[in-house]
Length: 65
Image 1 (cartoon, rainbow, N blue to C red):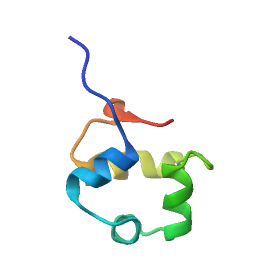
Image 2: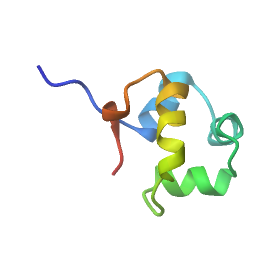
Image 3: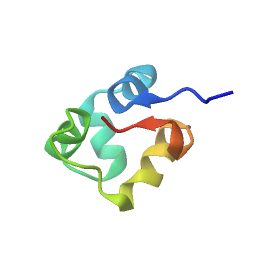
């Protein structure tokens, strides 16, 4: 059975966090997070694990568009 995959926007919405709140929790700028969510910029490899931990999912469940 394949695990569900979620976009960053969907994961953030499930937590009912703003982009600003999410960026602060990750220690990054809102502009950086916004770029990740809109797929304008790639997520830094050093932050992939932090994203999974923050949202309570496995790395493989995050869908980077």
